[in-house]
Amino acid sequence: MFEAMIDPTARPAASSESGVRAPRPAELSGLTVGLLANTKKNAEQFLDAVAELLAAQHGTAGVVRRKKLNIAEAAPAPMLAELVDSCDVIVVGVGDCGSCSASAVVDGLAAEAAGRPAVVICSDAFRLSADAMAQAQGEPGYTYLTTPHPVAPLVADEVDQRAQAILPGIVGMLTTPSNATVVA
Image (cartoon, rainbow, N blue to C red; front, side, top):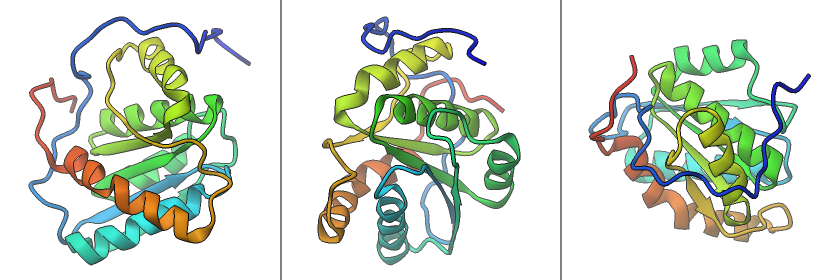
């Protein structure tokens, strides 16, 4: 069942940028965006708002939406493989609790290792869980984005505002080249 217990309150070791980074495109225009949501309330709505903004402001051409049904586990391998095969970039979220933040980091790392640029979004209250999982996965210092906690009780306009606020970070993480080692 569980291979290891993770202490989400442990501080990760100091590190520079993560070593797992897929090659980044110069821009998002014409690309297909994968959205990997979990079952937390407003996760799909948040990612849908992000997709609409990416299309309107950056010319993305399509979107593939998938929802994993267990917030505490990584996306099933076939689901992740489908996203990697059919999408140019992937947005994972929203980690709005300890378990879903940790599993979102695993999903982001898996997408990157499979060659797809990915950005993970967690609420800021769960940085320790996300950081602990990155460290447990051998990627201390893994970079992800945060939005203010909580996301679940937001109304539609607030979800849209959060998506607008985080959009520059998403674009920057999906398109900015890294000095880190690229995993093929």
